[in-house]
Image 1 (cartoon, helix red, strand yellow):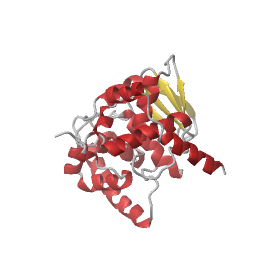
Image 2 (cartoon, protein in one colour; image 1 turned 90 degrees about the vertical axis):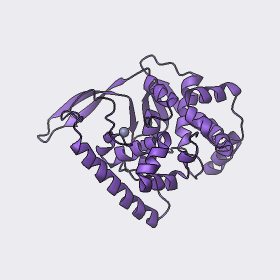
Image 3 (cartoon, protein in one colour; image 1 turned 180 degrees about the vertical axis):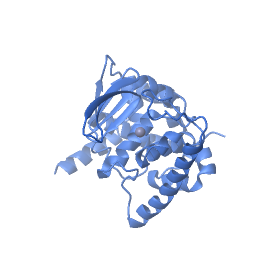
Image 4 (tube, protein in one colour; image 1 turned 90 degrees about the horizontal axis):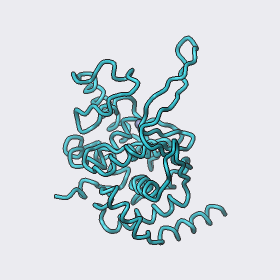
Length: 274
Ligand SMILES: [Zn+2]
C-alpha cells in the first residue's frame, strides 16, 4: 500500500514544473545540466522535485540551507538517476552540508587492537548508513566547471549508488548475471591499469596516502589516480570522468565508457558542445 502511495506522489511530483528561479539556479550552478537533451532535462526537473520532497538537508558549521544549496545538490544527484528505473537513493535520507572542507573523526583500530581517533580534512563523504556529506564551497566550484573531470557531489552520489546493494565494492545494482560478469571484467582491468599507473607516477608523493590533507587531485590520466585506492573509489572517480570528461574517457577508455554508459543509460559524450 505504501508503495502505491509513494509511486503516486512521485508521479505527481515528476509532472510538477520547477519554479523559474530554481531552473535558473540549475543553469547557473550546474551547467552540465544545460546540455541535456530536452526530454532528459524535463525528466531531471521532475526528479529534482521528488528528491527535494524526500530528502532532508542539514546545514553544519553554520551553513545555511538555501534554495541555491538544495536545488544545485538535487540536480547533481538526479543527473545520476536519469533514463533508468531507480528508487531515488533509497538508503540515503539526508545530505549534510558544510560551508567548506570539513574535519571528520574516524575511529581507527590498528593491528594491536589500539583504537585511535584520526581527524581528517574532507570535501565529501558518503556514509553507508544513509547520509552524504558535502563541502558546499567545493561542490559549487566543481559543479560550475563541467569539463574538468572533477565533481565531488557526483562522486559522493556515485558512492550511494554503489552502496544500494549493501556493499561499497565498486559494483552498483545491475540487471542480470551477464551484466555483472561484463562489469567485473571491464572494471577489474581498468582498475588494475590505474593502480599500475599510480605506482609509476613520479609526481605522486610517497607519503600521499598518509598525508592528513591530501593534495586535492593528482591527475595523470583521464581518471583521477585517487581511484586507485580501491574499487569503490574507482567507480566514483570513473563516474566523475564519465559526466565531466566524457569525450576523453570515451577516446582513451572505450570499454569503461561503454560499461558506464550501459549502467547509467546515458551518453554524455553526445552532449558536449562542439
Ligand atoms: Zn570517494
